[in-house]
Length: 89
Image (cartoon, rainbow, N blue to C red; front, side):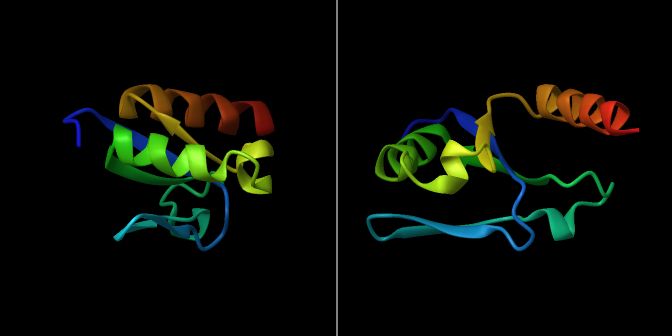
């Protein structure tokens, strides 16, 4: 596994459990989002774990419809969240 990490952004209410081989990871859903912006964040996810999961699930509706995606910088993710909140008002 590489040392590069990503932040997983999830719009599903209860998140999901990702599995790659024997490794599983609980992804936070938007119900736990502290600023009520309809985005759940899971930080410090190994980028290669995300890529492997994405390869296996690229045709899944949650991927195709943008309900889950990865961001390489938490700061960038927070900026996108602020823009989303502002555009929704």
